[in-house]
Amino acid sequence: MQHRVIGLLKNETVLVVAAVIALVSCILIPPDRQYLGYIHVNTLTQLGSLMMVVCGFQRIGVFHAIGAGLLSRVRSVRGLALVLVSLPFFSSMFITNDVALVTFVPFAIAVLIMAGLENHALLIVTLMTLGANVGSMLTPIGNAHNLYLKARSEMPTGEFLLLMAPYALVAALMLFLCCWFAFRNQHLNKFEGMDAQEIRRSILAPREEGIQPQVKEMQQSSGWRIAIYLLLFLVCLLGVAKLIPQWAMVLVVALTFLICDRRVFLHVDWGLLLTFVAFFIFIGNARRISQFYNLVSGLVNIHPLITSVLCSQVISNVPTALLVSGFSTAWRPIILGTNLGGLGTLVASMASLISYKAVVKQYPGKKGYYLKIYTVFNLLFLVVLVGMALLLE
Image (cartoon, rainbow, N blue to C red; front, side):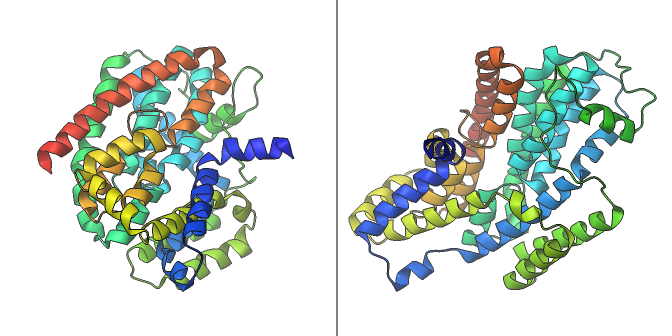
């Protein structure tokens, strides 16, 4: 029992904290009919549906197949670095930053071991993590808090993309320059003569000395599943854009996976949805305590962008988005602040912990060095992008 409690605290820290503060708020404001208005159902249905579809793609190995296909065209160390950093940058725009890192960081470490380039692993993982965090901020479906803030603000998708595009483009340029100057254009012949399928088999093959990509893939990634999952992804996009009813989106996605792959339901991060529910309850109750609400609202509205960035450094950007949005309707600075706030400290974006755990597992003696590299590059990106936001907004 004790081990289970400790495991829950370690694996679901944010959920536990959110549940505790929600329960405390329930003591101050006993449950009543107003509680029904606390829950932002659209956010939960959209996020849950997207998570199921992305999990479905993961289980048939689509993302690794794409990565292996790109690697088959790599002919230099610099090219390898650019491919590995680009994978989470672009994929996170559609599958979220945490899924991109869960998928591609172990994959990248296995690739570097195979290519004899482990000396570059820490820097490449750092840049991949940055890539996932800055890539995901471009789209409403790139991360959980973007989905929530878009739904709450009712901001059109086009306006959201235009708001975040300059920052994503500048970050992409910075990532390109980092790869260009940090890695030599040294010839790499490891993947010559190998097609994508051979590369994928080599990377995923068990080996004693290296970590393996942590995936629970099915035996075959048949074409009909890919086609069906692409259609489901389109259904989710239509749901996010409010072009189809939310209930229809959930029903189509859930019924399809009940037929095609029921195990998807076991691998979806339901804890994230429960975390959202807990924060909704806390924020709803906090708004009914007038003195507390007026105090926090006054502090947040002094400078919503900077407040969001600073809070994210301590409690991460998803909880920050949920909390700050409960006390301010300055949507543009909140969206910018929570996205840019994902850079900086290791906990600024909880997705960054995925990379850290992968590094610690493979290189336990180098975790301090990784934290130094991670912090230096993150602070550089944070200062540049926040400075840009202060000039533009």
